[in-house]
Image (cartoon, rainbow over all chains, first blue to last red; front, top):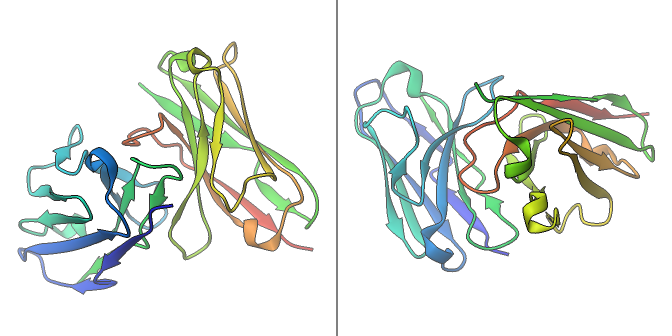
Length: 107
Length: 118
């Protein structure tokens, strides 16, 4: 089973800042099948990025994903007030599909 | 519009069984695998597993942590996916989400809360 670690655990930033979130896998994620999700309190998660760098439908271009192998990054170029949330990475290249523990982006 | 609605959650005693339903609309249910994810209160997301479409034999994959107690099933005629949980444990307390597909999970239900307590 591929284990995912995310860093930092919490990222304290301000609107307009750039956010860089890291997701590291315990072994190579096959075919870079790595997704990022955003979750706000009381809501279901929302898919942001799939296949490491492809934006999901309707996701603003300030969100971008990069990386390959075992190291992946989600970048939010300029934080908007609605971007303060918890972000999870997930690998779906190798069963069991696993989520990282999450990074909270707060003010 | 794709819609997924989980139901069947509630307060359950340890050791009992429970079946959750995921009622869907807005897409051809039989064409898609269905995934289940849970989230304990204040915790992160946990992938539970998925059931393939009947085009792929309707077989299931489970997380190691739930294998043997959790069972997925589906009724394509009703567009409903099911999750049966046996021998419920305190640590099964969580919001349970169903999601369309097995990878890059775009369409999620709103979740149903299961509380396991005596």
